[in-house]
Length: 228
Image (cartoon, rainbow, N blue to C red; front, side, top):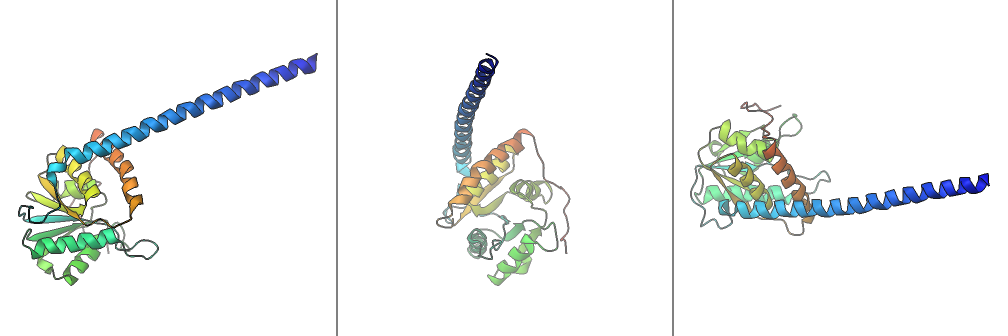
């Protein structure tokens, strides 16, 4: 009798655990669906809301004094060249050569002496024929938010054009528009077959909205010096 009672108790507990497991799994599934839907809504809404600030035809882009080139690594950790970087540099060069802007502001990460996006970008732009006097550097553009807000609040740039790929342009323009910064973005070429970065952008845009809700500011609003 005791063994029977014990078996029934174990069976009842196993049934309870099984029900709890399936309930949690079902809840998790619907949470995943809701999260995915939210990410898609944020992505589509962002693209639509800033569409009037995005240019892809250089002939339609108004003239500006300054273009802010958003930084990224020149090479991947594998040593392979980063085409996002290459196309941004080439686009910035074209804006100068065609007289669409007079000055380039390269903004990127330089937290350590061993990683200096602005210096690398400036050097490559000079190799592309851009004069040194036409290039300024922001060494504290750690994030897109930092680069865009610092261009306005720290360096007091007049209305400016940002240079990056379209997905990045849209995020930069969301930041500019929600903070009343007068800026547009000119689209650099997007590397073919690079889908992983675009997928990560869904989460980056969710972080962008959270930054806006929490009113996050750049890591520093000092002009900053090059870390050597």
